[in-house]
Length: 220
Picture 1 (tube, rainbow, N blue to C red):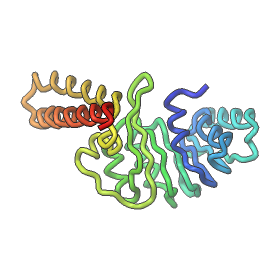
Picture 2 (cartoon, helix red, strand yellow):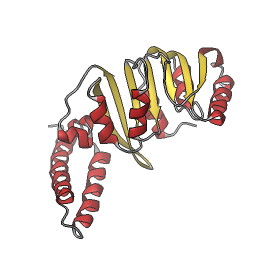
Picture 3 (cartoon, rainbow, N blue to C red):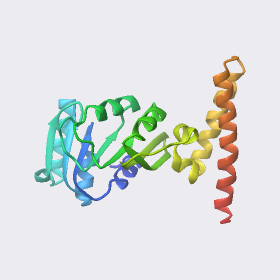
Picture 4 (cartoon, rainbow, N blue to C red):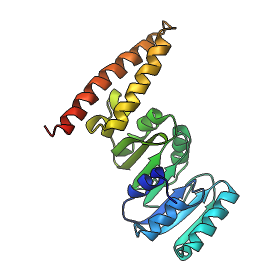
Protein backbone atom coordinates (compact mmCIF):
# COMPACT_ATOMS: atom_id res chain seq x y z
CA UNK A 1 0.00 0.00 0.00
CA UNK A 2 2.76 2.46 0.91
CA UNK A 3 5.07 3.84 -1.75
CA UNK A 4 8.77 4.36 -1.07
CA UNK A 5 8.01 8.08 -0.78
CA UNK A 6 5.31 7.66 1.87
CA UNK A 7 7.39 5.11 3.80
CA UNK A 8 10.34 7.50 4.00
CA UNK A 9 8.11 10.34 5.21
CA UNK A 10 6.54 8.17 7.93
CA UNK A 11 9.94 6.91 9.06
CA UNK A 12 10.98 10.51 9.73
CA UNK A 13 8.09 11.25 12.12
CA UNK A 14 9.44 11.39 15.68
CA UNK A 15 7.52 10.06 18.68
CA UNK A 16 5.14 12.78 19.86
CA UNK A 17 1.68 13.39 21.28
CA UNK A 18 -0.05 15.22 18.42
CA UNK A 19 0.69 15.02 14.70
CA UNK A 20 -0.85 17.36 12.14
CA UNK A 21 -1.07 15.76 8.70
CA UNK A 22 -1.50 18.85 6.51
CA UNK A 23 -2.88 18.19 3.04
CA UNK A 24 -3.57 14.66 4.23
CA UNK A 25 -5.19 13.40 1.02
CA UNK A 26 -6.06 9.71 1.64
CA UNK A 27 -4.74 9.88 5.20
CA UNK A 28 -2.06 7.21 4.84
CA UNK A 29 0.71 9.14 6.63
CA UNK A 30 -1.30 10.14 9.68
CA UNK A 31 -2.95 6.74 9.97
CA UNK A 32 0.27 4.74 9.81
CA UNK A 33 1.89 7.10 12.31
CA UNK A 34 -0.89 6.03 14.70
CA UNK A 35 -0.70 2.35 13.82
CA UNK A 36 3.06 2.37 14.47
CA UNK A 37 2.54 4.29 17.74
CA UNK A 38 4.74 7.14 16.61
CA UNK A 39 2.06 9.57 17.83
CA UNK A 40 -0.91 9.43 20.19
CA UNK A 41 -3.26 11.54 18.07
CA UNK A 42 -3.41 12.72 14.47
CA UNK A 43 -5.16 15.83 13.21
CA UNK A 44 -5.96 15.31 9.54
CA UNK A 45 -6.21 18.57 7.60
CA UNK A 46 -7.18 19.12 3.98
CA UNK A 47 -8.75 21.91 1.93
CA UNK A 48 -10.49 19.27 -0.19
CA UNK A 49 -13.64 17.86 1.41
CA UNK A 50 -13.54 14.67 -0.71
CA UNK A 51 -9.91 14.06 0.33
CA UNK A 52 -10.77 14.59 3.99
CA UNK A 53 -13.66 12.13 3.65
CA UNK A 54 -11.20 9.56 2.26
CA UNK A 55 -8.93 10.12 5.27
CA UNK A 56 -11.88 9.66 7.64
CA UNK A 57 -12.86 6.45 5.89
CA UNK A 58 -9.31 5.05 5.87
CA UNK A 59 -8.46 5.91 9.48
CA UNK A 60 -11.77 4.44 10.64
CA UNK A 61 -11.28 1.27 8.60
CA UNK A 62 -7.84 0.80 10.19
CA UNK A 63 -9.30 1.03 13.69
CA UNK A 64 -7.72 4.32 14.80
CA UNK A 65 -10.68 6.65 14.32
CA UNK A 66 -10.98 7.42 18.02
CA UNK A 67 -7.45 8.86 18.01
CA UNK A 68 -8.14 11.27 15.15
CA UNK A 69 -9.49 14.72 14.50
CA UNK A 70 -10.42 15.99 11.06
CA UNK A 71 -10.25 19.62 9.93
CA UNK A 72 -11.54 21.00 6.64
CA UNK A 73 -8.94 23.75 6.24
CA UNK A 74 -6.17 25.02 3.95
CA UNK A 75 -3.49 24.95 6.66
CA UNK A 76 -2.63 24.60 10.33
CA UNK A 77 -4.22 27.90 11.39
CA UNK A 78 -4.76 27.71 15.16
CA UNK A 79 -4.32 23.93 15.34
CA UNK A 80 -1.74 22.98 17.99
CA UNK A 81 0.54 20.06 17.19
CA UNK A 82 3.95 18.78 18.27
CA UNK A 83 4.82 17.60 14.77
CA UNK A 84 3.47 18.61 11.38
CA UNK A 85 3.87 16.72 8.13
CA UNK A 86 3.39 18.77 4.98
CA UNK A 87 4.02 16.65 1.89
CA UNK A 88 3.26 16.97 -1.80
CA UNK A 89 3.00 20.78 -1.86
CA UNK A 90 5.31 23.31 -3.47
CA UNK A 91 7.85 25.04 -1.28
CA UNK A 92 6.08 28.40 -1.56
CA UNK A 93 2.78 26.77 -0.52
CA UNK A 94 4.48 25.26 2.53
CA UNK A 95 5.91 28.67 3.44
CA UNK A 96 2.42 30.18 3.14
CA UNK A 97 0.98 27.51 5.45
CA UNK A 98 3.68 28.12 8.05
CA UNK A 99 3.29 31.90 7.91
CA UNK A 100 -0.42 31.54 8.66
CA UNK A 101 0.17 29.18 11.61
CA UNK A 102 -0.49 30.66 15.04
CA UNK A 103 1.90 28.35 16.91
CA UNK A 104 4.61 26.58 14.94
CA UNK A 105 5.11 22.87 15.76
CA UNK A 106 8.33 21.77 17.43
CA UNK A 107 9.18 19.54 14.48
CA UNK A 108 8.39 19.72 10.78
CA UNK A 109 8.57 16.83 8.31
CA UNK A 110 8.40 18.38 4.86
CA UNK A 111 8.38 16.93 1.35
CA UNK A 112 8.32 19.90 -1.04
CA UNK A 113 7.69 19.31 -4.74
CA UNK A 114 9.47 22.47 -5.96
CA UNK A 115 11.05 25.73 -4.73
CA UNK A 116 13.08 23.73 -2.21
CA UNK A 117 15.82 26.36 -1.92
CA UNK A 118 13.25 29.04 -1.07
CA UNK A 119 11.87 26.78 1.64
CA UNK A 120 15.33 26.19 3.14
CA UNK A 121 15.98 29.92 3.28
CA UNK A 122 12.67 30.51 5.04
CA UNK A 123 13.07 27.66 7.53
CA UNK A 124 16.46 28.69 8.88
CA UNK A 125 15.00 31.66 10.77
CA UNK A 126 12.89 29.48 13.10
CA UNK A 127 14.20 25.94 12.57
CA UNK A 128 17.37 23.93 12.38
CA UNK A 129 17.46 21.53 9.45
CA UNK A 130 18.37 18.20 11.03
CA UNK A 131 17.90 16.12 7.90
CA UNK A 132 17.68 17.29 4.30
CA UNK A 133 18.02 14.53 1.78
CA UNK A 134 17.08 13.72 -1.79
CA UNK A 135 15.75 10.27 -2.67
CA UNK A 136 14.31 8.56 -5.72
CA UNK A 137 10.94 6.88 -6.09
CA UNK A 138 10.39 6.92 -9.84
CA UNK A 139 11.45 10.58 -9.76
CA UNK A 140 13.48 12.66 -7.34
CA UNK A 141 12.04 14.00 -4.10
CA UNK A 142 13.43 16.05 -1.23
CA UNK A 143 12.68 15.26 2.40
CA UNK A 144 13.41 17.74 5.20
CA UNK A 145 13.15 17.29 8.96
CA UNK A 146 13.46 20.56 10.89
CA UNK A 147 13.38 21.19 14.64
CA UNK A 148 12.66 24.46 16.45
CA UNK A 149 15.72 26.68 16.64
CA UNK A 150 17.66 28.53 13.98
CA UNK A 151 20.21 27.73 11.32
CA UNK A 152 22.76 29.34 9.04
CA UNK A 153 22.95 27.52 5.74
CA UNK A 154 25.74 27.95 3.23
CA UNK A 155 24.93 28.73 -0.40
CA UNK A 156 25.58 25.10 -1.33
CA UNK A 157 23.41 23.82 1.52
CA UNK A 158 20.58 26.07 0.34
CA UNK A 159 20.99 24.81 -3.21
CA UNK A 160 21.49 21.10 -2.54
CA UNK A 161 20.62 20.19 1.06
CA UNK A 162 23.02 19.67 3.97
CA UNK A 163 22.59 15.91 4.32
CA UNK A 164 23.13 15.35 0.61
CA UNK A 165 26.44 17.21 0.80
CA UNK A 166 27.60 15.62 4.07
CA UNK A 167 26.51 12.06 3.23
CA UNK A 168 26.04 11.80 -0.55
CA UNK A 169 24.71 8.59 -2.02
CA UNK A 170 24.41 7.27 -5.56
CA UNK A 171 20.97 8.83 -6.07
CA UNK A 172 22.32 12.29 -5.27
CA UNK A 173 25.36 11.79 -7.51
CA UNK A 174 23.03 10.75 -10.33
CA UNK A 175 20.78 13.77 -9.71
CA UNK A 176 23.70 16.23 -9.82
CA UNK A 177 25.04 14.55 -12.97
CA UNK A 178 21.67 14.94 -14.68
CA UNK A 179 21.35 18.56 -13.57
CA UNK A 180 24.85 19.33 -14.84
CA UNK A 181 24.06 17.87 -18.26
CA UNK A 182 20.79 19.84 -18.37
CA UNK A 183 22.48 23.16 -17.60
CA UNK A 184 25.39 22.40 -19.95
CA UNK A 185 22.89 22.10 -22.79
CA UNK A 186 21.20 25.35 -21.79
CA UNK A 187 24.58 27.10 -21.57
CA UNK A 188 25.34 26.22 -25.18
CA UNK A 189 22.55 28.54 -26.34
CA UNK A 190 22.86 31.45 -23.91
CA UNK A 191 25.35 33.98 -22.57
CA UNK A 192 23.37 34.29 -19.33
CA UNK A 193 25.98 34.45 -16.59
CA UNK A 194 23.67 32.84 -14.01
CA UNK A 195 23.39 29.74 -16.19
CA UNK A 196 27.15 29.50 -16.59
CA UNK A 197 27.62 30.04 -12.85
CA UNK A 198 25.16 27.20 -12.22
CA UNK A 199 27.17 24.92 -14.49
CA UNK A 200 30.31 25.71 -12.53
CA UNK A 201 28.55 25.17 -9.18
CA UNK A 202 27.18 21.82 -10.32
CA UNK A 203 30.55 20.75 -11.71
CA UNK A 204 32.32 21.52 -8.43
CA UNK A 205 29.57 19.86 -6.38
CA UNK A 206 29.67 16.72 -8.52
CA UNK A 207 33.45 16.45 -8.10
CA UNK A 208 33.17 16.81 -4.32
CA UNK A 209 30.31 14.35 -3.81
CA UNK A 210 31.90 11.76 -6.11
CA UNK A 211 35.06 11.89 -4.01
CA UNK A 212 33.04 11.52 -0.79
CA UNK A 213 30.98 8.65 -2.19
CA UNK A 214 34.10 6.79 -3.33
CA UNK A 215 35.65 7.34 0.09
CA UNK A 216 32.58 5.90 1.87
CA UNK A 217 32.50 2.91 -0.49
CA UNK A 218 36.15 2.21 0.28
CA UNK A 219 35.47 2.72 4.02
CA UNK A 220 38.29 5.23 4.30
